[in-house]
Image (cartoon, rainbow, N blue to C red; front, side, top):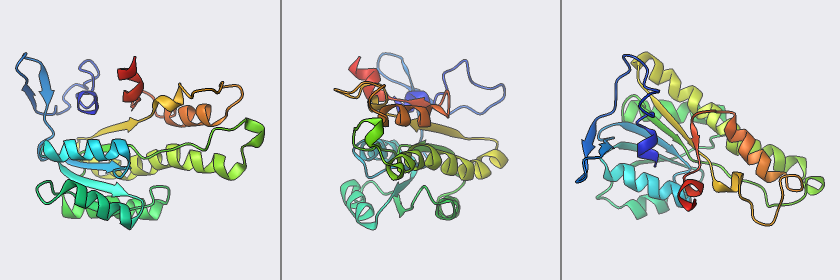
Length: 212
């Protein structure tokens, strides 16, 4: 799904914008190639992040896998193994100074960032709005909105001069399908959805798409 989204939907392809290389499967369907594309993946240590990171590394992308803690970096590097090398880094993606330094390091070590996958995110434990404290609300917005803004901002500093870039934000089915809670009673769900929706046309919730 992430690879398909990166094809930018065909009709949305801007005139003159470079396209990603494509190959075709046995049934003749176009499959995009990310081989040698410098790709930053946030939330790489999470369940979805690990799968996406492994796939992009397997497809030959030059991957920078961004984790929050050093322990996560070590676990991810071990899971990928020497046969699937990636630049695994720690970064608090809600801290602008750290994000700027991370993106600049990726540019120095791997080359100009070409693809950014904003996968990092989360939500507070489901609870009624009247029981949700301000700190939990602020944390949700930092993880789901501020992280996207900061990573996109600093990736674009490199993408724009290069006249090339792809940014995909990954949401979750939690945004629209929180079991046992209604939108009126539970604030984490609308908070999660609306923060991601602030980046229209770029957010996808693949889990919901395939469950349907």
